[in-house]
Image 1 (cartoon, protein in one colour):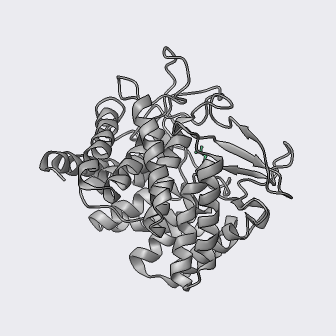
Image 2 (image 1 turned 90 degrees about the vertical axis):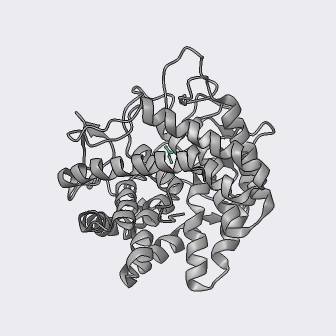
Amino acid sequence: MNKKDYDWAENVADKIYAKTKHSVKRSRDKIPYLTQDGIFDDWSDRIHWWTNGFYAGQLWQLYHAYSDEEFRQAAEVIEDKLDAGLMDYMGMDHDSGFKWLLTAVADYKVTGKETSRNRGLLAAANLAGRFNIAGNFIRAWNDGGDGNTAGWAIIDCMMNLPLLYWAGEQTNDPRFSHIAKAHADTAVKAFVREDGSVNHIVHFDPDTGEIVETLGGQGMGVGSSWTRGQAWAVYGFALSYRHTGKKEYLDTAKKAAGYFEKSLPESGLVPVDFCQDKDCEWEDSTAAAAAACGMLEIENHVKEEEKAYYHDTAMRLLKTLEEKRCNWKEGVDYILKNGSVAYHDENHNFPIIYGDYYFTEAVFKLCGKELLMW
Ligand code: GLY
């Protein structure tokens, strides 16, 4: 790591600490997702929502780095609240990694608390139970009134697989990683296109396992490249490589990363979909932050002569965010503005909690403060 990037990251990490010190006082007992007038809202009554672990994840990163009890206590409140979701089978979906790796598993890693380990293992067992053996994929969502989704898998699930790798290590039981690897193997073939772009949703026949169709999901349409999905592929495959050492996963992460880097506009700001019109101003800062984490993860695993490409791409993304998209005002809860949930949403370019989380994680990786979450 060169000293200039390290110093930059140290400085930004301190700003994240100072900023979150203010937001946490206003957010005790909340599960933040979006903001109203700069102040976090509270999703405690929508306990199954996939983003409910991100603020706690940010707090655990900060507690790990700065040993400030206020962060730990607020993270524990969110972890306790998530039990209501864990006890409701029909509300559980494949996003257990996002929810419990950043809450209970993080808590267990830091404190060794047995109740937290138990929560993580229960979440992992539920995730493993979503595996479809005919198609070798983990089912994404439950039916939500819009048809039968028993055969749907989504690229985002690559980020949930580390919960299975963790559970396998904890229980010394390879079933968990067999399932994670089977899903990742399917994802290499079914989601990643020749040029490194990825499908968001693949619909399999849940009885035969055959691919029925691909769907545009949160991107612009079939065959387009939704940037956050692209970021999930970059980071998710790199993480499966970290946990398994299977070279195909690293090669796939590099392919998705190469597509991401080549598609970046001059500004370094990430659109919602790489295929959207060049004059469309819809952005997704959360995709930029998550992709930066993925680039830094790849940097850890490639040969010396390849490292600069991934490192410099991550730095370009992060410095652009810091210069143009961060809000460091004490009275405003969010850090990153200009996230987007999906291309076809009514609203774009607003703060979303997972943007702050991945920005924090990437900055902490750069200055050696990171708590390994995935
Ligand atoms: N996992 C859903 C999303 O990235 O929006």
